[in-house]
Length: 242
Image 1 (cartoon, rainbow, N blue to C red):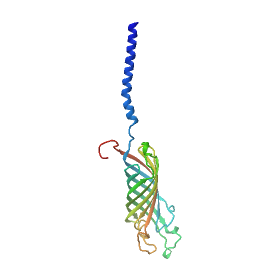
Image 2 (cartoon, one colour):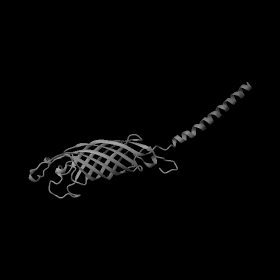
Image 3 (cartoon, rainbow, N blue to C red):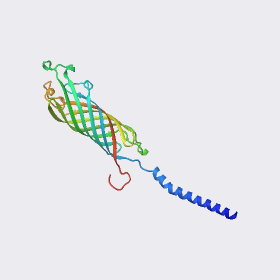
Image 4 (spheres, rainbow, N blue to C red):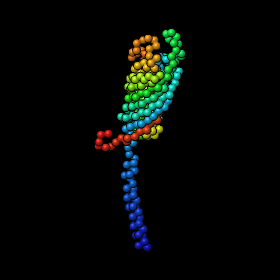
């Protein structure tokens, strides 16, 4: 009986020792998992689809009078949770008719047009909130409005002629982070075309007013629903430049 009692004591001591080593070996992994940094990314690739509108010689006030098709592809460099640099390629169909206008043109003329416009843009974007997930100390938000301003170059094709001009895009949107890498956004953009041929050569100067930056310039708008995916994991704790 005395031998059995000693064996039971030894077994208890051995069990306690094994349990201690098991807890000791698991604890660092648990602590590491609890303190692990969330993944953040440097780049964002996306595409959008929606509708376009036009303001110019054949439509002076109503963006919705001749809606068209619009689509884009974009690439962002994510500087931080507030700022990004974004490159875009936009394609939009534009159309209009002077018959819808209240003003009468010289000689009672009526002009219709349709054109396809391609625009390459570079923008700076600013999120109104710190956008993202995780990292509670940064007060990140899944939903954030944003503003954008940039420059671009557009090419419009209409009636067999092609016109190229500089553009100034201005945009307002709302983005939502569905998952850590997946984003949805709804954006309205107005783009000023520094020229008067986005609606074709025949509408370049209907009122016989010399073209300028203020007068006789065209605008187009886009309302796009976009999806984007982030990649290029950012180094959070390392000893190299990121």
